[in-house]
Length: 259
Image (cartoon, rainbow, N blue to C red; front, side, top):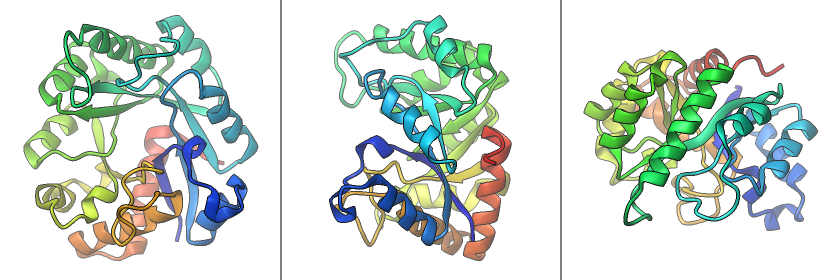
């Protein structure tokens, strides 16, 4: 079995169980079948750690971007994003998008940042990693206005219903499922996992956040993408190996070769 964790934050993992060695955590993930990981940037201050990790481990790729909730630190221009993305280890722009859950007031700055990331993605021909929380209508509208469908990408840690999933699929985005899909309360999301076309889904951990059942409430790690894939296989009534093969194929189609 070969699984890909399509979204994790390796620079933020709790490494205490691994003698404070990232290599130990990644080796454990490899041992349980997680053969590749996409380490996703959320700010410029940690970007060096993100890209250095991708250059240290040949089974890790990276992205460049600034999370919509980041209010401090450097906010890159389009040209800066394009320059940083000009690296073979950078396979995507993001994570970017809109998050109105933690932000208040005039959020024009968040929308403008989002538009810059979309422009950089189109200029570099690298897919987008989209974060969308309590901002569904504006996120989909801006993706459409900025012609993001021409480059596509992934709706990371998707938590919406099937109606929203269809709109995202129509915009040339695939749906990525995190540990949330294992929660008993996530009935609408589980329905999405049943319905989404097999060639339009990915699995992720978003580690160290959102650990799946039976690790809910604990610090997440890339190895736990196995539990996410197991839940998807249960919901779709197919083997774990089939989910692994499908999501790996989908990852390679979206983000490119991992060799």
